[in-house]
Length: 243
Image 1 (cartoon, rainbow, N blue to C red):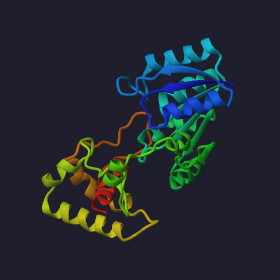
Image 2: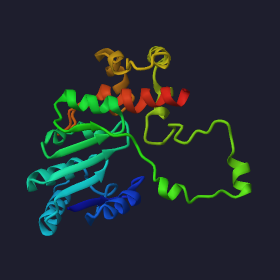
Image 3: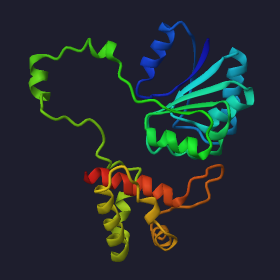
Image 4: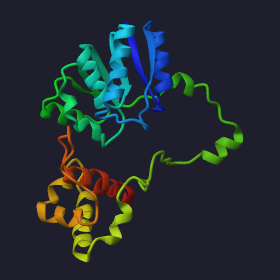
């Protein structure tokens, strides 16, 4: 099978490319400019992907995470698009392009996979994140490294203070809004398996938030909302950071 691989610096990208080859598939590479182009509605990028699909006669297109511009190009060529999601929230999944029947979406978060199916996505599945055990087994720590990193508990990941979120805007909210959001987040910390964040953002609260944070419900081809974005990109990250 010919697989057109959307190549960008994704975690696990090199491993998956190697495994595709080991399984006997023909791997074709497309240098995907995920940071420098419009990956949602980029017309020129979509044309380039479609031309590559037709030129190589690829059977499927694969990418880590979902990109609407790829889905649109694959849909136009009547091929299959397989993607493996490892980010959450994955905002581009809220594009209308997610509903193309050629999409086969595998999500590491079972809740999100269920949500996609409830929303009407035909091929949405749960697939946990994986590890390259073949390469990891080759890593032998030196005595110094073992002593440095040995611990009863280890945490690998982000503390969610990245520059792309809205944390820095928090001090600009008035006392009422800060108190309200603090209460919602404190309640969410105590409720596992239940998400109350978006539901707590009624119209009055969102109007106050929008005075400080540049949010809009006009997303073009997307069906997410300003409340969803703020709940997931601000409140959920702040809850995680506090935990």
